Image (cartoon, rainbow, N blue to C red; front, side, top):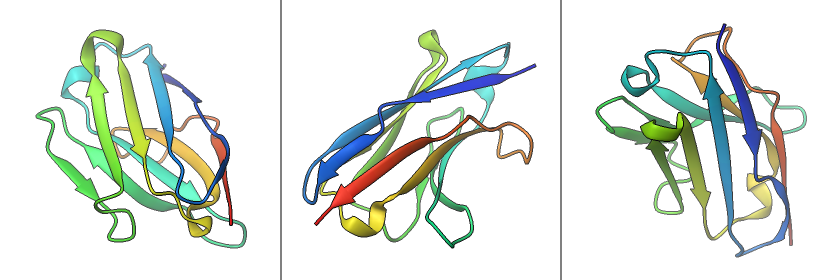
Length: 115
């Protein structure tokens, strides 16, 4: 059973930075698995923010391109999301996802960006 634990959320002023971490346990194929970050703002559906394949190919939502960077450390079974130049509209609960599956989610971490 894969378990995902996110950390690194918090309150930051607009223009600031945060780095989210997601540690995966229970997987023997982490290095081969696409990992992703999603976010869900109040009253909105959960949406893909960024994804990284096992070959380290990345994909970003248009709204975060040039500001966010997804990366992974396979030795630590961890995926990161570096968020720079944060905007109030980035405020959401951020979720880690394993394998782009509908069942493997972390508990979420709140990111709040004040104006």
